[in-house]
Amino acid sequence: MVLFRDMLIDTPYPLLGIEDRRIWSEPETSQCSYCRAQGDFTPYDSRDVVVVRRWKRRSVWQPELDGPDSGGRYEWRCQRHPFDYSSSPYAGNAPDHLRPPANERCENVTLSARCSNRTGEQYEGRWLCAEHSTEVVERLRVEERLREIDEQLSGDADDTPL
Figure 1 (cartoon, one colour):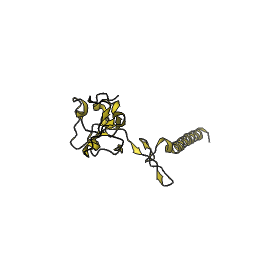
Figure 2 (spheres, helix red, strand yellow):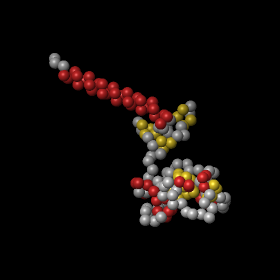
Figure 3 (spheres, rainbow, N blue to C red):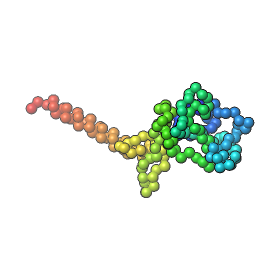
Figure 4 (cartoon, rainbow, N blue to C red):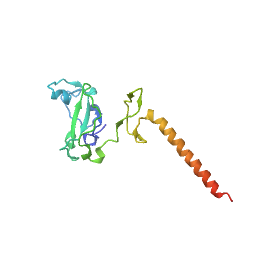
């Protein structure tokens, strides 16, 4: 469970996983921010709704306030309006502890299709998911071991008398 004030920006949280969510007359349902903006007030099952904290130009961090008033703008999203993991336009203005770790799309391309996995790891300047980073990680380990062996051999050569 997470509190609104502890939610990271640009990170979807299941509505039912938010500890201090408002008490509605119908706790099993909720509405989507995007559907409501289009005039559609369809109630969705709370299990199908995620909440995303976004950081806007006028967002202010106010930890003393409870719920969604603690800073940023919160979006309730249904399955028809999923979060696309785009960064908030003013994410750099958010407090450091509210910024999520890097979450980029894997840059590996196979058969002209880019991998759709998300990752927070960068290898040799490229964002690679766990699946596509294994070859790079193994090669880096081998190179590191070869450097260690080379250093040992060059150190042994210095010890031999001429």
